[in-house]
Length: 283
Image (cartoon, rainbow, N blue to C red; front, side, top):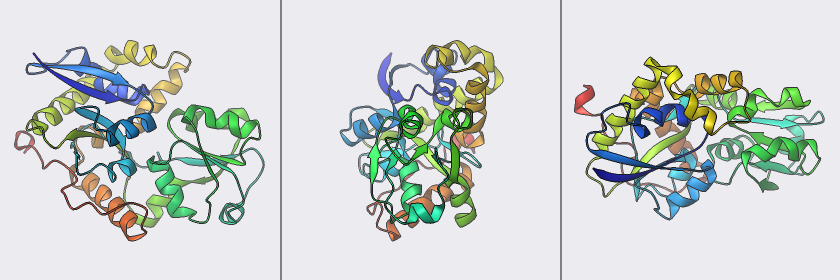
């Protein structure tokens, strides 16, 4: 067996996607995948150090390590109506956010959430980085004026008495008419088996869709405090056709993100190809 490290988040969508691969519910073609689970901003930082063969990372962070990694066509989190939300305890207008005087909690400097926030509110500079799961409480406790929430917090903030200032996914989609590229699965460029790994992840996604209950023990193991309905909402929101294969629409959305980010000097230029070319096996 050929060992290969694969890092992803403990969130329901990633556990759903990788369950069949990790637990060999599919033929892994001689590969033994060694999982490492961590918060996405932790994975972003690890990617900058080149720690793992294959890793989940934010598309924003990818711009800073695209010379060492290339995105696979499968495993990504893209979609519509699934973007980050800017939320607050008191009523805050978008104009007040643009005033630049508010303390804003963000789930990491290199998250795509912060990328989108930077495009929408370039004047807002007072940002406080914290783990995404801590942001709601930071807003409730008054430690920050507003917070940028991602993942399952989309489904919980209203129950805690918090309110939405803006849906940055809607902002992106209305501005670009493209799906939102949130996170993807990248592989080291020095590897020569990127198409094989991409195809295996696609097979794992296909299995997960065909046998959704098989992955639930793994999902629950890493989301024990999450209600089952929230787990399923999370999966339904972030796992879709783009997780199986980016396709032309997904690739165009990624290119748009990079083109816009580079034109606004939010991310550096990347001279190398961003995404593994389509697999001949899927043609």
